[in-house]
Amino acid sequence: MSSRHKRAKKEVGKYSRAVVRQFAEWIDVCSFRLRLKVAIKIIRGKL
Image 1 (spheres, rainbow, N blue to C red):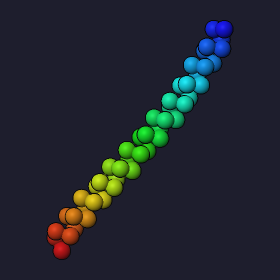
Image 2: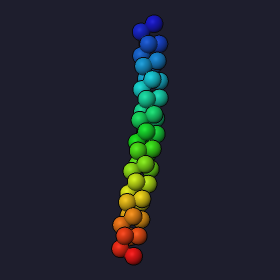
Image 3: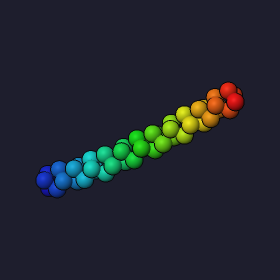
Image 4: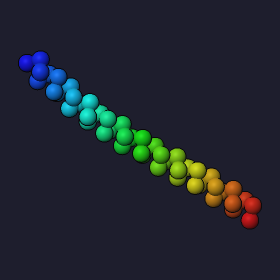
């Protein structure tokens, strides 16, 4: 029973790590888009 519990914990850890990685990528994309928008605004303001 305890070994099965350990394995379940490992699976959950693997899953949560994947979710965290996905979330980090999503945040990177969002911040990149935000920076892109700001850069475009600045460029348009200078033109």
